[in-house]
Image 1 (cartoon, rainbow, N blue to C red):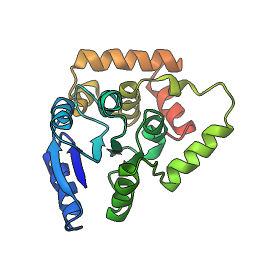
Image 2 (image 1 turned 90 degrees about the vertical axis):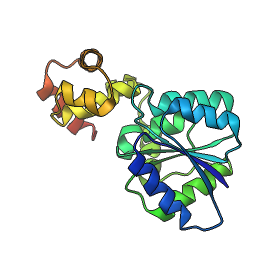
Image 3 (image 1 turned 60 degrees about the vertical axis):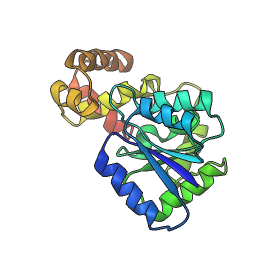
Length: 207
């Protein structure tokens, strides 16, 4: 099975390679550090599954996923993130990913997700399955935070943790002005006035 690992952190890529290489003979692994390199490699060779990080600097994983689904609709895609399922799992599955895993998952869980993704199936962790079940029971009117873009969700989460605009810009590889714009959009879309309101909102919705 051919796997492409897409992550902007070399240490993470090496760690994933080491985990997968323990299953000797099963995987041929290549790596890409961003979306541009990932698309180039997908066009140049055949892959069965891609492990895709959610946060990839200027072009996040969801943007890459959109391009992948446009050009390679049958490619298995497992999205990986440091964020828990409550943050992005449903978005990932709705956007066409075959699985969404937290980077703290077990090697067994990772390999199971890869196997199912390569076969065109969807792998759901128990937490993601519960989220989907809860989502089906919700009224048609969705919570305000579900109208946020993926970048706005990332900024919102970091804001709620008390991070400064400068630190958020560094973490997401964005300019301070861009983060400030996202910050303003978050407050506007959630109809919140200040950071205290935002923290309370995230606690109320389990974000």
